[in-house]
Image (tube, rainbow, N blue to C red; front, side, top):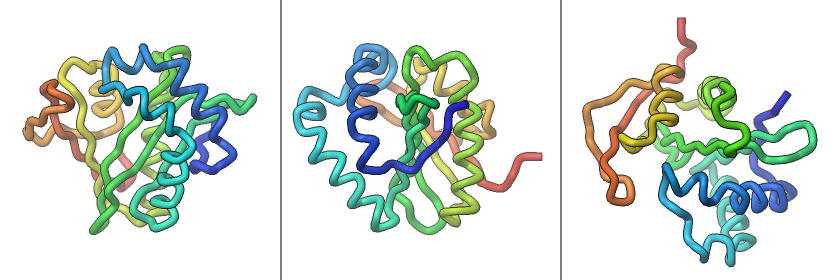
Length: 164
């Protein structure tokens, strides 16, 4: 069973492989990270871990029993009891309910481990998979429209209290 783990330095090789292997898949629904992301991966990871240590962000990876990264689930811009959720799943792990289950788990962690009460997320209108995960996990559209790398999107919000 896959496990959600807080991002650590030893995740670097599996995380880089995840990003490289799924680059084209991700680019179909979210903005491409660009070549510099891969060239400067080690420095970028170090910066993320430093930022995480300050409590401004909480980065996670969904890892299978072999240590392969199946997804990324991040809480960023933590302030005043809220944070922004971002996530991406490997192509081979998509459409299996893992993103939905992991977002629900992360909502619980947000409340119990990080003392967050509200999570926000944004998804492009044409990113049906992410919008479905958000809806299934209790996020509701706020009505606020945003541009995500030139693509129209919606903002969603959810409290971290358990759903009944």
